[in-house]
Length: 236
Image 1: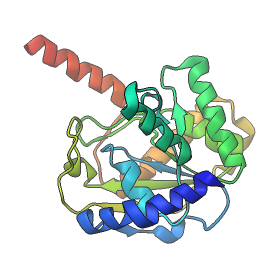
Image 2 (image 1 turned 135 degrees about the horizontal axis):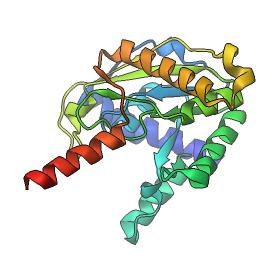
Image 3 (image 1 turned 90 degrees about the vertical axis):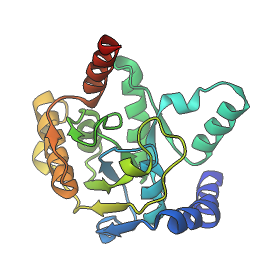
Image 4 (image 1 turned 90 degrees about the horizontal axis):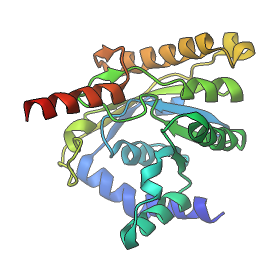
């Protein structure tokens, strides 16, 4: 399979040596990632580079739900970026809501049914201030529909390596803590119930908070970003 071969070649001979030398990432709980079979890696999201550090340390390929914008940029650079994401098996996530978002989740669900290890950021976007924000229900829908375990992940210090808006990363050490798999057997028969989906999502976010030590904020990160942007415009 071309995608898998490309993934391993790029990781082994290009990305991993560079990342391990420059950032010396440490990881705890790597044995919580199953050697085979489908599972969801649900992580906090502090930096664009989160999607680089985690796959470097996880032996298996990780297929991330990646922002749709990465697949539609114009020009030669945009085309190259799109091809890279496609070949490495990433799944475009449309965050506009409605049927578009559901189609993205359906593609992720199909990947899980094929045995993939799926990476997802339940907050939906990067934290604007290093705190942990309310999780969206997509992660619960995937977990309940496919009945696969969810593995909570805490990225540590990546916001200091590459804060929002900074293209060139700072050279400093980062870490990852991978928690024990969570199974949601009690909710499988109520997979379409929004109260069940919220309970599952909140449990996942609690476990991420416990691992990361972040302060939890019970609002969506996207809403907080809009609020901060409005405040900046009002001040300017």
